[in-house]
Length: 427
Image (cartoon, one colour):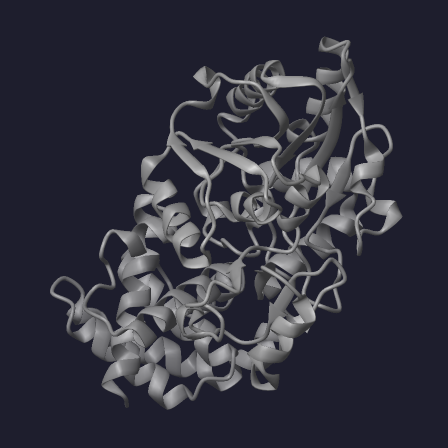
């Protein structure tokens, strides 16, 4: 049994403890230093194992409940969950069981339960793969599932859940020619050019080690998210405002067109990534840590990626269903409305505006635009701006905007859920 593999598994259990015990985002748990003693490859493996376990948590718990008379402490339960998911995904049972027994055996509080871990995981290993495949695709929490069923129907919701369970590939936005970038990344990374121009990679590569990273040939950005900046269609010299800009993929897209970009976000910490990426790709933008509701100015084009429930990114962030319960949604939609109205006041007559959210909920997309159109007599839809390469006509609602869902592109790995509206300010 590899000490490195055991260390990665121990790190994954620690991450699960923070997500499920402290309701902490997986990214925050990583940033807090939970994995700082691990090598970069082991760190990446720990994160992947934790994410895989969160995706399969419902299935793992269904299998485990058949072998547990009472629920053990959270850390022990998470070790069992991780072990179950690994074995059901094809890992050798011997190595998994031994690693989990060692992890719990070395735990100051729970070492007495290593016998339980050994016995339960050995029983799970006997029939796990077959039983695993017979279980339903893990479902979203009731508060979210009911809303999605109401909005998109039960069948589509089931497909969205399947996309969440499958997880997300790594998408790159190329600075120049996507086909050339795909060629440079090589066949071993299974690089494919998507219909919209993003480049999708297979496997779980280390981002900073990929060809073109140091040269700034691309940046990481989901294919759905990349469409918002393209819809704004900025040109050289235009004064452009990117509100709620961090972590900055859209800022880079806008700057790449030669526009004069101002990127504003309330989080100075999140803007650090944008500073790094601007330096890496050799682009310029004015970056400001400020509250978008108090920002002033006059712009030819504005992109507002409004704060939202992030329900469209669950395929990429499987911790979200365990951290949200629907509380605060009304406050979020009210904030979106205020930000939209304020940003609209900064747009010059004749200017272009893109409003977007990484949400699957109509109240954070279609309903927001319907309400905004009634508030602003000088606001008009520009659905022609959404007819971008690779966008299916059926994805565009002529009375609202572009609705993207995780179940789209099922044969190529899906996309994040997104809503994008393109607007023009009448003279």
